[in-house]
Image (tube, rainbow, N blue to C red; front, side):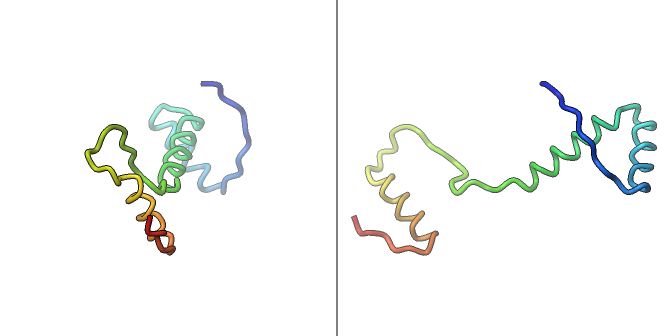
Length: 82
């Protein structure tokens, strides 16, 4: 993976804590910050409207129509009755 240099600004106390941590753990500031940013982004990522997708035969012929009806209902709209 290609890495790119950037600059961040931290409170002096936070930077001191980070420097102590990397010395104790024998790691780098880059590694700690990358993990912290990735963890934060993962926990703040928007949940998809449909958190699952199924492909294949269901034996239920109205599955796509029912799915549309459910999504309309969840969006506050009424189904078209088709």
